[in-house]
Amino acid sequence: MSNFSLSYIVLRTSYIVHRMLCIGLTGGLGSGKSTVARIFEVLGIPVYYADAASKRLMNDDEKVKAAVEKAFGKEVYSGGRLNRKYLAETVFKDEKKLELLNSIVHPATLRDADEWINRQSVPYIIKEAALIFESGSHKSLDYVIGVKAPLHLRLQRAMKRDNISKEDAMARINRQINEEIKMRLCDFIIVNDEQQLVISQVLALHESLLLKSKEIEM
Image 1 (cartoon, helix red, strand yellow):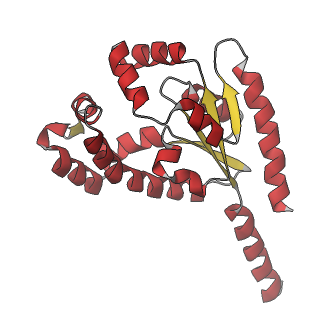
Image 2 (cartoon, rainbow, N blue to C red):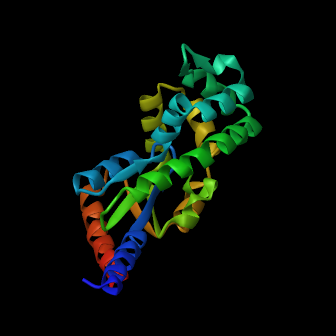
């Protein structure tokens, strides 16, 4: 095989990998976006859980840990592990402290996500995150899927999952972009209202994304 042919194959392969579709998946607190993400995983689509990754980085990345401790004091870690309850109570009551935490964690999470994406070789990947638009990470994505649910269901789910009061759940929801605005920013919507079947919505979207991934390889 000539050097020219080999170079072409390398360039063509790099192009295809580079053009793998990167799909965002977002929704407000309690919308059920993690449930939707797990359905995509069952279909063989890799999912990067940004919120889980940020918690991992705050526990395992020494630079992130040092920055968080400097910003919020030694109480933020107990036995070398993140005191999530203390941190949540601190930042959700103070918008400036929440912004400070995001300024530390979001850049590290974006770098971690990029490294993870570069290791994938599939038609498309999913990046699940609550703050896709707030963090600006939507700018590096091809499409964004929004998961929508009625407020009363979101409150019930958040209260049960995080063992928090209705008031605390509502306070956290109010810290996020208004759901109607967020959904208008999304390219696709999945309704998770316990009335419509979520699986059928995901299957239809999966087929559509597979077609779109083939189009960019042509």
